[in-house]
Image 1 (tube, helix red, strand yellow):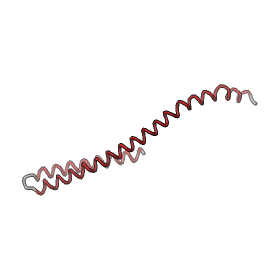
Image 2 (image 1 turned 30 degrees about the vertical axis):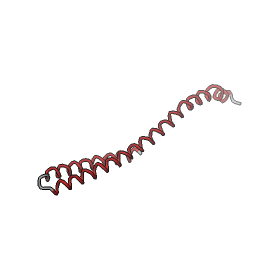
Image 3 (image 1 turned 90 degrees about the horizontal axis):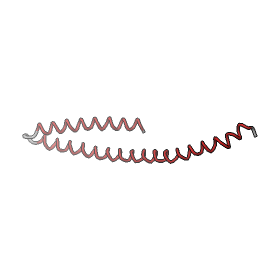
Length: 97
């Protein structure tokens, strides 16, 4: 057996194994946290859609009333801004995943 290989097996391999033993739990934790993050973002998306739908509904109800037309317009504007932010968030998340 070549002398360099024996050195590798005797000294370097245990060091590499120690590094891998430390790295693997961190890597598993990283993957788990990534999955949790993805689930959380999915929940945020569902909640954001409900919020958007509620804003639109309130805007429709307010627009039907003569006295609250301005309120209805404002709610529609808020809903549109919220929709744009949600689209940007979803695009950003899809790029990262």
